[in-house]
Image (tube, rainbow over all chains, first blue to last red; front, side):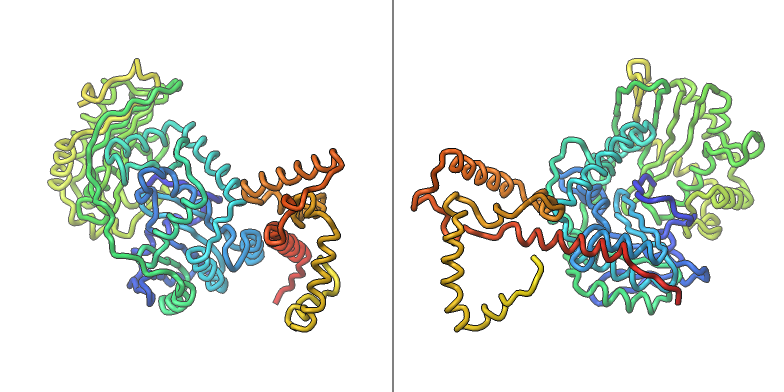
Length: 414
Length: 123
């Protein structure tokens, strides 16, 4: 999932948010904050505050406000200054990080088990009493600007953002990164926080703590959080379309995407299987055995070509497709056709699904708990081909980035 | 700033404030900064780290007004005049707009010093 992360990469292979799936039960505090705990036996613990306030929930005229909110995590709040939070975290040996996705903004603290109460308290203060001080705003705006310029310089990120924008327009189509033109002020941030930092949009996920203890801590820490209304978010609608981005890159980037499946649905596992089969990641370097169709095709094309499949699943929609770099239109078409042909042939035995899981875990890719063998058992070859057919029946989203006068149009690819 | 102060005791006691408040008002009028259109916080010496940071944190409009008042005062000084009775700053306009920010910044500096001098020990 495309997301922006501040702070050094965590050592966890499994993102804490997905770890919530391992919890035996998800309970709620008095005012509706969801609490999930996994009692692992490691000496370290981690606590994550997940707020349903990603880029999807940005008001139309305030594009990019979620990016600011993510960078305002751990800043001055009513109880502690930002300086004090940073110093106290250092003293206990914790690591703070913040992460923004299309649906959630996540603040994480990795620490020792005995410091979990401290960080739960900090998260409670973050939600209820972040000051959003004017003098901090300039620093945050600078951080946001540097992250935006990093994104603009990365064609891969631009392609994925453009694909989402064309596919979903607003809501899920909003870019995770701030826009250069939106005028965000500190009062806009306060209003966004007041609307979205409400109990029914917040979840606390922790590892290395018992369920009962975490619920206790959460009840105290989040006691001053407003309950929030039951208003449902606007449903996502898939549109599809063409995007052409002119940039002075040597390698042309092309991406093709279709309407995928929402996360957690049975179709989503089918999509994951299809993605793994199409692949594009070499599990064993310089080996031709077990090489997925797309990476084989990329290898054959040569001259730095890379093709890989992606599958993004959100709460009520998904995006499935393939992105290619340094590949001509004909080569891309041929690679996709070959992949389609091979995919059906490869997915025959249960052995294939084990391979897929093992490879994903070994590569350090995100393994969702739902990608257990049981879930894959329910996916048959027929499901995969049915899903592939359904994909192709939706309007394609094509993104073309680079020297656009030399690159093909969407309908030339399909 | 620092030192022994009996402000709270005076304000609490009706008798003491009744006696001392008029004296205080006379002192402020005699000080004369209001006759140059300045507020008390404009007169604070801003060449210290704390007050410089506090001035930086002023909201934009307050910053511009502060600069304007200083320009007016400088013009009075150049022309060797003071404000007329109508233009003199009224006591209700003499708001301590900068002092809360100074207190905030001073607390932050003190906190930083505390953390820099923290003594840790192993249990």
